[in-house]
Image (cartoon, rainbow, N blue to C red):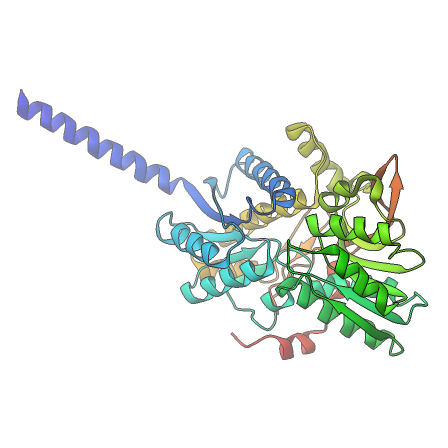
Length: 400
C-alpha cells in the first residue's frame, strides 16, 4: 500500500510538472518596469493603458496562440533599482523582453543593462535623445517622440514669435538637460537673432519656485521655455501667476498639454502657452475613437497621455513578438526594424536606422474652459516629419 501511495504521489508530481511546463510553453512573458510609486499621475493611467492592451491581445488569440503575460515591477525612481528589477525579470522570470521606464536616466540605465545582457528593451516613455542616438544600442527601441522631435514641433511655432530674449526653466537631470540643449540648438538655427538671457535648473521634484521665478523675472526675458512637469509645474505656475511672471510673455512648454499635468492646474492654468500634449476630447479619428471607447468602457474615466503610451507599448510588443514568432533577441530586433503598426494616433513605424518610432504628438495652446485647463487649436504632428536625416543620425549614433 505504501509503495502504491508513493508511486501515486510521484505520478501526481510528474503530471503537475508537465502541466507547469505546458503552461509555460503556452504563454509569453514580458517584463515591465516603471516609477509607479514616484510618479502616479502618469504611471497609473499608463498601467491602465497597458492592462487594456493585454486584455485585447489575449482576447484576439494572444501571440500566435500563446497567452501574453506582463510581469510588472516598480523602480521607485532609482536607476539602480530599475537595473535590479530588470535582472530579476530576465534571470528569475525568463521574460522575452523588457518594456517601460519613465525618467530618462532610468531609461538609460535599463538600456545599458539590455545592451550588456543582450536583452530586447522597448523603452516606453523616456524622452532623452541619448537613448536612440549617442547612447543607442541594437537592443533598445523607443516608442514616444523624443526631445528632439518635440522640440522641433515646438520650435516650428516658437520661431514665429517676435520675442528675442529667452530664458529657460528645466529640471536638472538628463531629461531637462537634453530638452533645453536641443530646443536651444534648433531655435537658434531658425532664429539667429535669439539671445538666451537666463537658465534655471531646479532639482527634479524639489523646485523652490519663488527664487526661480524671481531670477527669471530679473533677467527680463520676452519669452520662456518651460520643461518642468508634475508637482514642479504646479508650483512654478502658482508662483509665476502670483508674481506676474507670465504676463505679456510668451511661454513654450514641453508636455504641459498632457491631461496628467494640465488637470492639476485647474483654474490656475495660464492661457496661451504653446505646448505639446494630448487633447483627447478633440481628436476625431477612427483609430482614436476605437481606443477611447474601449478605455472609457473599462475604466469609466478619460485617458491621459500615459494611457496611450502604456497601451501602445504593449500593442507594439505584441506585434513584434507575433512577427518574430520567437523570443530570441536577434529575431525580435530583426522583426522590429522597419515594422509598421496601427496606434490610436495612426500608423507608426520603428525606424531601422535609430530604433525610434514615428509616433507623433499634438501641438496647441493652453486655455481655460469651465474652470479647467484644456488644449485648443491643436494639430497632430507626425513624428516622421520631425526627425533628422539618416546622414545626421549616422553621426549621432554609434555603430552597433
